Image 1 (cartoon, rainbow, N blue to C red):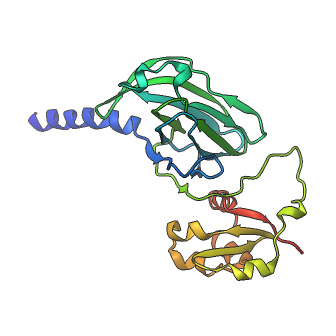
Image 2 (image 1 turned 60 degrees about the vertical axis):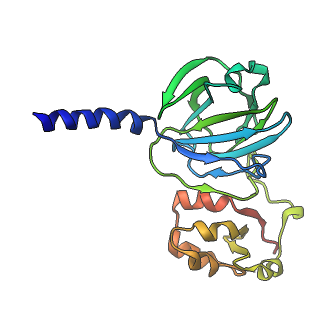
Image 3 (image 1 turned 90 degrees about the vertical axis):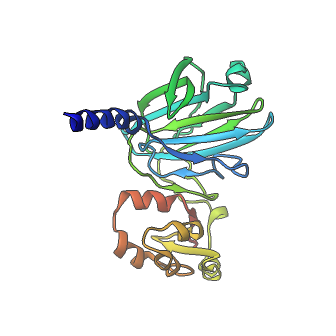
Length: 260
């Protein structure tokens, strides 16, 4: 009987935590825009993105990917303590979400609900669920005063990949169009970037800067380094084929079209 009671108590303690856990991601002060901020490779996975500001006008940002028809889940929270809980809505950081089709949404607070997690009290200021678009969402944050906020993306409680480093985000268009000549890159340029410090590779006619992927690649450094400075299409395809998640991550490193 005692063992049953202890087991029940443990389950009661563990369950609320697992149901509310989010993978933490902190935006650095140098990540001053969505394009320069972290990329959440799968935006259906639950991430808690933290952004702290020391002054008005300071900017930060991040990005996340969704596939067509996947659910977009986005939440805005603050810790329920000063200075954040004493600020008026207009004094809290402004968040603008740019969808893959280019449409922009400025977050408008629609609630002020208390929420407690792991001994910390929060306030929900905004929650939204909708059907997502295929592509990359850009989230740009601008401070109005000294404050810190948490933005939650996704709901799946599983580990997710986060890519750091500035990367080109493909702009949505109603139909496929060739990359402009201003963004075209030559094979000579690719060959010059053939080390772990600067690793470019050609895959399926596009040029990618894989430098920041080297240290985080689950297969080890060598799997990426072997692609540096060459046309790595065959090697990459033989390893990953049509893996959608890998291709989504690869696209976050896109520099442009290879000039022929």
